[in-house]
Amino acid sequence: MPLPKYRQIADEIRQQIKSGRLAVGQRLPTEPQLQQQYDASRNTVRDATAVLVNEGLIERVPGRSGGMMVREKVTLTFHAHRAEMPAGPRAETDAWRSEVERQGYEASQQFQLTIEELSTDLAERLLVEPESAAVLRRCVRYVNGQPSSVQDTYYPMDLANEVRELLSPRDIPQGTTRLLAERGHSQVGYYDEYISRMPTPEEATLLGLQLGTPVLLFIRTGYTSKRPARVSVTVFAGDRNRIVSTHGDPVVIAKFRQEEASE
Figure 1 (cartoon, rainbow, N blue to C red):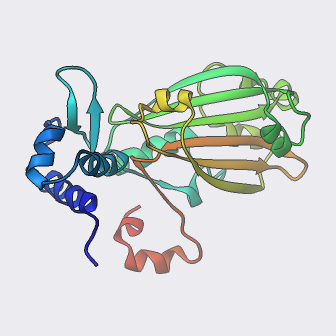
Figure 2: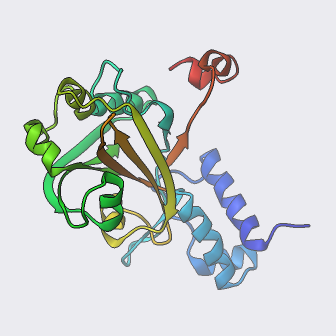
Figure 3: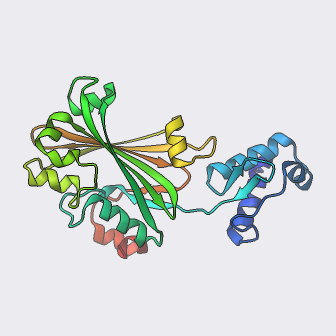
Protein backbone atom coordinates (compact mmCIF):
# COMPACT_ATOMS: atom_id res chain seq x y z
CA MET A 1 0.00 0.00 0.00
CA PRO A 2 1.59 3.33 -1.02
CA LEU A 3 2.36 5.95 1.59
CA PRO A 4 -0.01 8.92 1.89
CA LYS A 5 1.09 11.76 -0.36
CA TYR A 6 2.07 14.06 2.52
CA ARG A 7 4.44 11.35 3.79
CA GLN A 8 5.95 10.96 0.32
CA ILE A 9 6.57 14.72 0.14
CA ALA A 10 8.05 14.77 3.66
CA ASP A 11 10.32 11.82 2.81
CA GLU A 12 11.64 13.54 -0.31
CA ILE A 13 12.34 16.84 1.44
CA ARG A 14 13.93 15.00 4.38
CA GLN A 15 16.28 13.21 2.00
CA GLN A 16 17.25 16.53 0.38
CA ILE A 17 18.13 17.91 3.82
CA LYS A 18 20.13 14.85 4.85
CA SER A 19 22.04 14.79 1.55
CA GLY A 20 22.91 18.48 1.83
CA ARG A 21 20.94 19.58 -1.21
CA LEU A 22 18.99 21.73 1.22
CA ALA A 23 21.51 23.28 3.63
CA VAL A 24 21.04 24.68 7.12
CA GLY A 25 19.52 28.15 6.87
CA GLN A 26 18.23 27.60 3.35
CA ARG A 27 14.64 28.53 2.62
CA LEU A 28 12.27 25.89 1.28
CA PRO A 29 10.03 26.70 -1.69
CA THR A 30 6.83 28.52 -0.74
CA GLU A 31 3.61 26.60 -0.16
CA PRO A 32 2.26 27.47 -3.64
CA GLN A 33 5.55 26.35 -5.17
CA LEU A 34 5.44 23.06 -3.28
CA GLN A 35 1.83 22.55 -4.30
CA GLN A 36 2.80 22.96 -7.93
CA GLN A 37 5.98 20.90 -7.62
CA TYR A 38 4.19 17.92 -6.08
CA ASP A 39 0.77 18.44 -7.63
CA ALA A 40 -0.68 18.49 -4.11
CA SER A 41 -3.29 20.44 -2.20
CA ARG A 42 -2.43 23.13 0.33
CA ASN A 43 -3.44 20.88 3.24
CA THR A 44 -1.26 18.04 1.95
CA VAL A 45 1.77 20.35 1.74
CA ARG A 46 1.07 21.71 5.23
CA ASP A 47 0.80 18.17 6.63
CA ALA A 48 4.14 17.29 5.01
CA THR A 49 5.97 20.32 6.41
CA ALA A 50 4.37 19.76 9.82
CA VAL A 51 6.03 16.33 9.94
CA LEU A 52 9.43 17.92 9.29
CA VAL A 53 8.83 20.67 11.85
CA ASN A 54 8.04 18.06 14.50
CA GLU A 55 11.22 16.18 13.57
CA GLY A 56 13.23 19.36 14.10
CA LEU A 57 14.46 19.47 10.51
CA ILE A 58 12.77 22.73 9.50
CA GLU A 59 11.26 25.70 11.29
CA ARG A 60 8.68 28.34 10.49
CA VAL A 61 10.24 31.79 10.51
CA PRO A 62 7.63 34.57 10.79
CA GLY A 63 7.70 37.82 8.87
CA ARG A 64 7.81 38.91 5.26
CA SER A 65 11.36 37.60 4.83
CA GLY A 66 10.62 34.34 6.67
CA GLY A 67 9.11 31.08 5.54
CA MET A 68 10.11 27.46 6.01
CA MET A 69 13.83 27.24 6.78
CA VAL A 70 16.16 24.27 7.23
CA ARG A 71 17.39 24.27 10.83
CA GLU A 72 20.44 22.76 12.44
CA LYS A 73 19.52 19.30 13.68
CA VAL A 74 21.15 18.70 17.05
CA THR A 75 20.04 15.52 18.80
CA LEU A 76 21.47 14.86 22.24
CA THR A 77 21.43 11.33 23.65
CA PHE A 78 20.52 11.30 27.35
CA HIS A 79 21.58 8.13 29.19
CA ALA A 80 18.90 7.85 31.87
CA HIS A 81 20.47 4.79 33.50
CA ARG A 82 23.60 6.68 34.55
CA ALA A 83 22.21 10.18 35.11
CA GLU A 84 23.14 11.72 38.47
CA MET A 85 24.76 8.62 39.89
CA PRO A 86 25.88 9.55 43.43
CA ALA A 87 28.98 7.34 43.24
CA GLY A 88 30.32 9.27 40.26
CA PRO A 89 33.39 11.48 40.67
CA ARG A 90 31.75 14.59 39.16
CA ALA A 91 28.88 16.93 39.97
CA GLU A 92 25.62 16.56 38.04
CA THR A 93 26.34 19.64 35.91
CA ASP A 94 29.87 18.46 35.11
CA ALA A 95 28.58 15.01 34.18
CA TRP A 96 25.95 16.54 31.87
CA ARG A 97 28.50 18.87 30.30
CA SER A 98 30.88 15.96 29.67
CA GLU A 99 28.03 13.98 28.12
CA VAL A 100 27.29 16.81 25.69
CA GLU A 101 30.94 17.38 24.80
CA ARG A 102 31.53 13.65 24.31
CA GLN A 103 28.88 13.77 21.59
CA GLY A 104 30.70 16.60 19.83
CA TYR A 105 28.53 19.53 20.97
CA GLU A 106 29.03 22.66 23.06
CA ALA A 107 27.31 22.83 26.45
CA SER A 108 26.09 25.80 28.47
CA GLN A 109 23.40 26.44 31.04
CA GLN A 110 21.56 29.12 33.00
CA PHE A 111 20.85 28.60 36.69
CA GLN A 112 18.08 30.07 38.84
CA LEU A 113 16.93 29.53 42.44
CA THR A 114 13.48 30.36 43.79
CA ILE A 115 11.19 29.37 46.65
CA GLU A 116 7.95 27.86 45.34
CA GLU A 117 4.71 26.37 46.64
CA LEU A 118 4.49 22.70 45.71
CA SER A 119 1.71 21.51 43.46
CA THR A 120 -0.37 18.57 44.67
CA ASP A 121 1.44 15.99 42.53
CA LEU A 122 4.91 17.16 43.62
CA ALA A 123 3.83 17.30 47.27
CA GLU A 124 2.59 13.72 47.01
CA ARG A 125 5.96 12.59 45.66
CA LEU A 126 7.79 14.34 48.52
CA LEU A 127 5.24 13.22 51.15
CA VAL A 128 4.55 16.76 52.34
CA GLU A 129 1.40 18.87 52.46
CA PRO A 130 0.19 20.49 49.21
CA GLU A 131 1.28 24.11 48.83
CA SER A 132 4.21 23.50 51.17
CA ALA A 133 7.24 25.65 50.43
CA ALA A 134 10.14 24.08 48.58
CA VAL A 135 13.44 25.16 47.10
CA LEU A 136 13.42 25.07 43.31
CA ARG A 137 16.81 24.88 41.59
CA ARG A 138 16.34 25.35 37.84
CA CYS A 139 18.85 24.71 35.07
CA VAL A 140 18.03 25.67 31.49
CA ARG A 141 20.50 23.65 29.43
CA TYR A 142 21.75 24.54 25.96
CA VAL A 143 23.43 22.43 23.29
CA ASN A 144 25.29 24.41 20.62
CA GLY A 145 23.53 27.49 21.94
CA GLN A 146 20.08 25.99 21.39
CA PRO A 147 17.85 25.27 24.42
CA SER A 148 17.63 21.51 24.85
CA SER A 149 16.06 20.84 28.25
CA VAL A 150 14.91 22.43 31.49
CA GLN A 151 15.67 20.66 34.76
CA ASP A 152 13.65 21.72 37.82
CA THR A 153 14.69 20.10 41.10
CA TYR A 154 12.54 20.55 44.20
CA TYR A 155 13.82 20.09 47.77
CA PRO A 156 11.57 20.13 50.86
CA MET A 157 12.05 23.33 52.85
CA ASP A 158 12.98 21.57 56.09
CA LEU A 159 15.78 19.73 54.28
CA ALA A 160 17.02 22.96 52.72
CA ASN A 161 17.05 24.64 56.14
CA GLU A 162 19.23 21.80 57.40
CA VAL A 163 21.53 21.72 54.36
CA ARG A 164 21.82 25.47 53.80
CA GLU A 165 23.89 25.18 50.61
CA LEU A 166 20.70 24.14 48.82
CA LEU A 167 19.63 27.78 49.23
CA SER A 168 22.72 29.06 47.42
CA PRO A 169 21.90 31.01 44.22
CA ARG A 170 24.95 29.42 42.59
CA ASP A 171 25.87 25.99 41.32
CA ILE A 172 27.12 23.66 44.04
CA PRO A 173 30.68 22.49 43.16
CA GLN A 174 30.28 18.84 44.16
CA GLY A 175 26.65 18.65 43.04
CA THR A 176 23.57 18.39 45.23
CA THR A 177 23.50 14.58 45.23
CA ARG A 178 26.99 14.32 46.72
CA LEU A 179 26.35 17.28 49.02
CA LEU A 180 23.31 15.58 50.54
CA ALA A 181 25.26 12.33 50.92
CA GLU A 182 28.03 14.19 52.75
CA ARG A 183 25.40 15.57 55.16
CA GLY A 184 23.89 12.19 55.94
CA HIS A 185 21.17 12.13 53.29
CA SER A 186 22.45 9.56 50.81
CA GLN A 187 19.90 8.75 48.13
CA VAL A 188 19.66 4.98 48.04
CA GLY A 189 16.82 4.61 45.54
CA TYR A 190 15.23 6.37 42.58
CA TYR A 191 11.77 6.18 41.08
CA ASP A 192 11.72 7.33 37.45
CA GLU A 193 8.71 8.36 35.38
CA TYR A 194 8.45 9.28 31.69
CA ILE A 195 5.54 11.38 30.47
CA SER A 196 4.99 12.70 26.95
CA ARG A 197 2.71 15.69 26.43
CA MET A 198 2.41 19.04 24.70
CA PRO A 199 4.40 21.88 26.33
CA THR A 200 3.04 24.59 28.56
CA PRO A 201 3.42 28.15 27.21
CA GLU A 202 6.37 28.68 29.57
CA GLU A 203 8.10 25.50 28.39
CA ALA A 204 7.52 26.39 24.74
CA THR A 205 9.14 29.78 25.33
CA LEU A 206 12.10 28.48 27.36
CA LEU A 207 12.85 25.76 24.81
CA GLY A 208 12.02 27.77 21.70
CA LEU A 209 9.61 25.10 20.47
CA GLN A 210 7.83 25.23 17.15
CA LEU A 211 4.04 24.92 17.29
CA GLY A 212 3.02 21.27 17.59
CA THR A 213 6.32 20.04 19.07
CA PRO A 214 5.83 17.79 22.14
CA VAL A 215 8.05 17.47 25.20
CA LEU A 216 9.17 14.45 27.21
CA LEU A 217 9.21 14.69 31.00
CA PHE A 218 11.76 12.66 32.92
CA ILE A 219 10.68 12.77 36.58
CA ARG A 220 13.07 11.32 39.14
CA THR A 221 12.21 11.06 42.84
CA GLY A 222 15.26 10.41 45.00
CA TYR A 223 14.86 8.55 48.30
CA THR A 224 17.06 8.27 51.34
CA SER A 225 16.45 5.38 53.73
CA LYS A 226 14.13 7.68 55.70
CA ARG A 227 12.32 9.95 53.23
CA PRO A 228 11.97 11.35 49.71
CA ALA A 229 14.73 13.96 49.42
CA ARG A 230 13.97 15.62 46.11
CA VAL A 231 12.05 15.51 42.86
CA SER A 232 13.78 16.42 39.59
CA VAL A 233 11.58 17.21 36.60
CA THR A 234 13.54 17.43 33.35
CA VAL A 235 11.59 18.69 30.35
CA PHE A 236 13.23 17.61 27.10
CA ALA A 237 12.43 19.26 23.78
CA GLY A 238 10.89 16.44 21.76
CA ASP A 239 12.59 17.39 18.51
CA ARG A 240 16.21 17.44 19.75
CA ASN A 241 16.66 14.69 22.35
CA ARG A 242 16.95 10.91 22.44
CA ILE A 243 16.54 9.00 25.70
CA VAL A 244 18.27 5.65 26.17
CA SER A 245 18.52 3.27 29.10
CA THR A 246 20.49 0.04 29.36
CA HIS A 247 20.01 -2.80 31.84
CA GLY A 248 22.06 -5.85 32.68
CA ASP A 249 25.72 -6.48 31.80
CA PRO A 250 27.28 -3.35 30.24
CA VAL A 251 30.25 -5.35 28.92
CA VAL A 252 27.97 -7.55 26.81
CA ILE A 253 26.12 -4.50 25.47
CA ALA A 254 29.42 -2.81 24.63
CA LYS A 255 30.35 -5.72 22.35
CA PHE A 256 27.52 -4.84 20.01
CA ARG A 257 27.11 -1.08 20.45
CA GLN A 258 30.12 1.04 19.59
CA GLU A 259 28.59 4.16 21.14
CA GLU A 260 28.41 2.42 24.52
CA ALA A 261 31.86 0.89 24.20
CA SER A 262 33.46 4.29 23.63
CA GLU A 263 31.84 5.95 26.65
